[in-house]
Image (cartoon, rainbow, N blue to C red; front, top):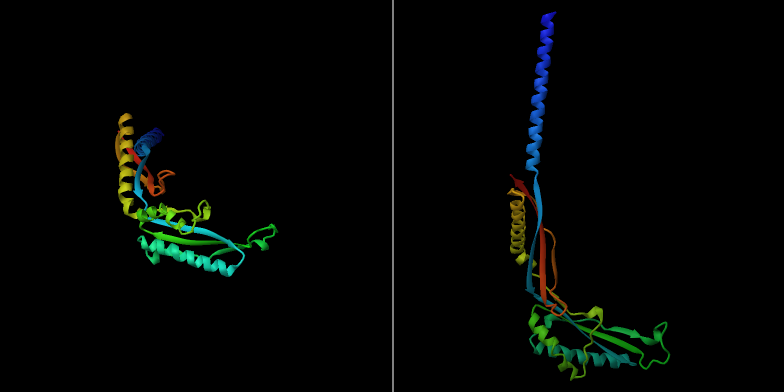
Length: 237
């Protein structure tokens, strides 16, 4: 009987010891796991100013009259003058597109005025699409040459706004991502230093979206390219 009691005690002791060791190992493992999961999340910004490399310039003018045949003749003559102006100043025919005219019959308008002077209001649009941005900018400033020939290029219509574009984003992406990542690491290093830690390896990284915007309202032909990366780093003691 005493022998059996001794065996029970020994077994209990071994079980208790085993549970203690298991608990210690679990505690140590959890603490090590927590240490490994100490991270800092930082953002890195990269910005770059670039000139636009493509321009879309709509040249829009209007004609009014009562005879469509005469209006079309007038528009053909003016279109030829505009194309001649553009090609003589360095643009090619391939960079000029002539759209079908937009015709409004004022007498057919539901709420039209019976006392209108002209029945037809016609809008003509020639569009320049070119990579010669500086050349087009100079031509935009020389529209008075067309005005001297009786052609008033209209502005202010939201449908026919000049657009300056930047299309070479892929060429500058790698260096901008590199710069953003370096800036993120510098921020993380400062955080680690202030918290008496050492900066570890990257845990996760997110590139973020590239954005292209005008530098300001007065210089739409200069673009601001921006990207923000988010990087998570491990922190070590």
